[in-house]
Length: 240
Picture 1 (cartoon, rainbow, N blue to C red):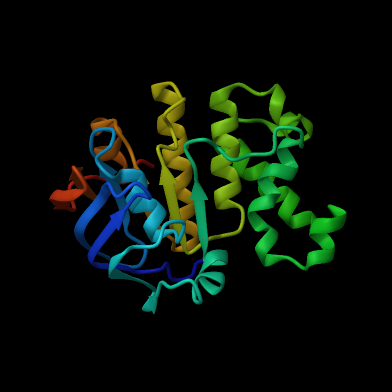
Picture 2 (cartoon, rainbow, N blue to C red; picture 1 turned 180 degrees about the vertical axis):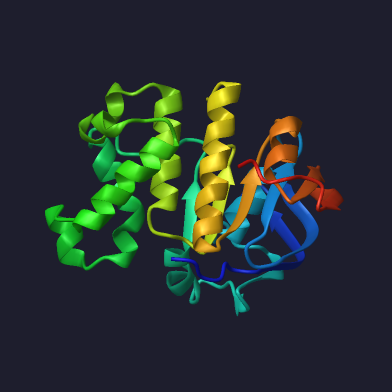
């Protein structure tokens, strides 16, 4: 299942919020295929904005972003989106649906429309969903449970599984372990790094725990007021 991750090249990127506030100020960044990078910084430093820009959810007003050598533009985003798995701070899950349906939604872009509309998913994909949940510490019984019956930490892990299910070439995770206790957080990061090794994916993960970042990432980038203030290479070790 291994394949090349997406390289990331960000050049002199500036991003402003709708109210004119500068979220990112002339940020430049280079990440190779299959690298694992942690983004750190205080609240409001620009971590979420950087992930949103790389994932195409926010378009820069200056500078450029290349993913796997492709310039990120509104017209190229539809082709890039199926290659990107995203974990959101607010989960963005369907509370009235089952855990299985929420996880498999992450693979919808790679499936024929009729399978999505009829909920007739391939058996191997359903088994993959169970495998990912198990990696994250949620047993098979969770597959049939409604999302709104879960705790916040359990829902957060469902969101991680959804991001991983499609075998993305780029994983963007915005505070993916914020609702988890330390042992569960470490297990979740190990799951992300394990799947990244398996698929060859590049990972960019916003974290606020220095110890977890050091154990998880090959590179740690620190943001302050929308600017990169340090970028340490080969400072961590894999969490697995």
